[in-house]
Image (cartoon, rainbow, N blue to C red; front, side):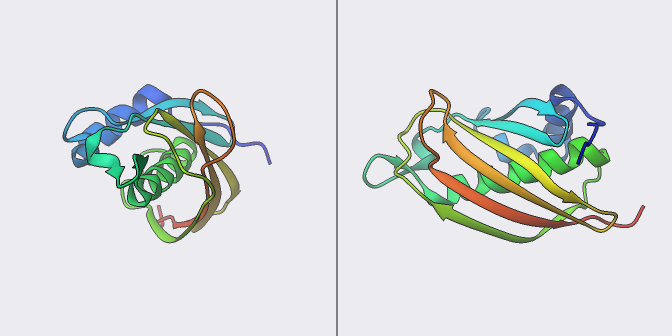
Length: 143
């Protein structure tokens, strides 16, 4: 499947800043770093708000990163549709994520008129094994 992005990383960042300012309300934590055909990459710069006991990034933070990366990848390919919504997201936590920057690479598996299915792989920016893997389905509103 070859998909051509309609939005750049900068355009997606401006969209998120306008439509979802609460995501980065305490300072930029989630950043769109790259958009490629059929994919988008987001960076998480965790701070103390994302810490869980044991000195690791919390599960809800990784869930948010997965959901946001999915949303961004889909919007990158359909345009700025604020009302595209998550209908399902399943995440597997694979390893303890250190409190370092992580990248979420989201790949579109299916992009239909009404539904999109994606997978998200989260790994430390410095490299290494995946810390989490998610699949998500989004509902796309009619045009």
